Image (cartoon, rainbow, N blue to C red; front, side, top):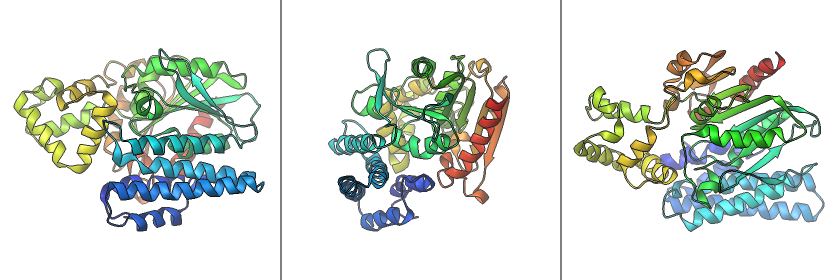
Length: 402
């Protein structure tokens, strides 16, 4: 562990995944960890923000001195550091420090993107009453050529900055245009607009695809959808109802939100399989015991109470479980028609049902496994993103070559 606190280490080591793509260097991450030491969430936040402010200042100085490339790199790196600062502060009411860091994150990202040639500019994708923020990142070295596009979709708590460094840089270098966006319950849509997560992700992706096919440099016959973290559920759900998706990647292949909670109810609380079939209908005594287990565990409290309640727009565990039950590929998996790649990391609980998911698919399909021996056993292979990017993009190259 780089950070003394387990939760700080979980969040604070995200930028390790971005090292191959210019999002951070190990020494910078380690230096922040030393400043945080045994401090609380406020100390964690301040250490990351102070480092991000320093990078932003250096970026401005580089720009003034005519060093455009250095300025671009530093602004983008600052965006990563701002993005890493506020995850422990999740929850409602929304912490003003979270909003402050997020706004500086977006500002740094915009300033860095504006220094590309041609510049990458923020856009808005029309969607119901609240347009979705997005960026179209062209393929490196082929900025004006017609190429396939990869639409990237986040999960519970990643941001556009995270998707860019975790996946889009590698895809752009491989010759793919990339489209990054915040959907309902994600990033700006949640933090600033209060728009919550929804299960019918096909409606969200339909709007994104509508935007993509309007771009003259997009090959509309080769549109890939790549979801990571909870996006490993949202992306397949979207593909089950959006026929314009030509290839699908789910990292990890996630059958449902409720599945893990169902297993916990059975094995930890002694709930029968029959009673656990509908978690939102559990008896009040079981709900109270379940709630106590969640709140007594710092990680679970953050994931369910702070993050889950906020993202789903609920106030209690029963309503959260009712909402979670709606996020399932039951009766949807067989509708996915495009070639599909699921991933499964050795120690990632979200991918535990990936083999069952694979069996339910009726399309051309493949399962990629990642192991501790490869340094890729954790959630979304965050300790070895270059490995998963190579394998995923090799698979995608093969699909689109056909």
